[in-house]
View 1 (tube, rainbow, N blue to C red):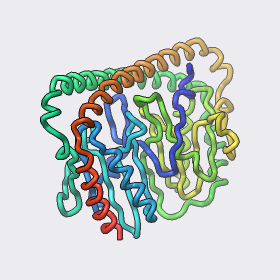
View 2: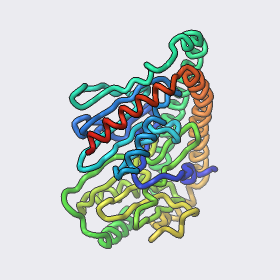
View 3: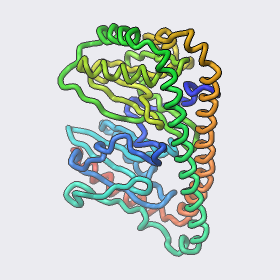
View 4: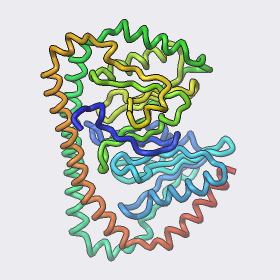
Length: 364
């Protein structure tokens, strides 16, 4: 892979799956912390415990039971380990319950304890003597894991600077009036907007321990329009697209990449999504927008060598970030093994049964 446009590999998800946040140039950042506002829910659970204590499995089991009985689930996955859940929202009968991981790097305080929010502490079910006997290993793996995440952050900070240079260079060859005209024609063909216009930030892309990945959430939309970017103009195009959609009154779910630019956009009310092009599902697209049509071919050709150098630097820096996360993964799974061995999961099962009954009653 030597092109930024080919960086993120799609992984299967449903139409209500996102990342809670991202490994970014600023470290871990939430996509939109308003999702974690306690007043939005009938009950708000913060689940805590060490790695390997079963937090993600706990949430997945409850999600499975509740969706089987008709609840709607919105799943938020971990940007470091896409197989793990960081949060799940369950909705039924006009009521909502949220369960969220509250361990580092997530920092969740209970502002309405008892009245709305409640702590689920899986740490009460571990054998402290086992963990005390492994203190040296826990401290060593934790320190190395933190260093690996810090290296990832530094690589991504540098990658963001190079990405900015690439985008500024591409902007010089971009025909804004031509692109704006095409965008307005596209928008005129969409169903009329309904009600008040809303914009929300989500994340479908992540730099993770398992590579650079993209949840294919928006690919499930009825009308999928692909943006094919061979010119590094996607950030410019998506900024313009979002502005024109807002001007026309369309509500948007805006997926922001770990480097801060817009990666894709969904219009829930219009049943339409604008996603990065992938040859794997090209038959699903209702339309393909090739950004090269909005570019000055002569200017692009003249700057090809510099553009190739900058993109090579960008990919090398992201490879550095991914390698750092691969190192973090080794320490993370070593910690998981230590904590798993110290857990009494029969007690976790009893807690699961209790909270499952509580959640069913709150959503009744």
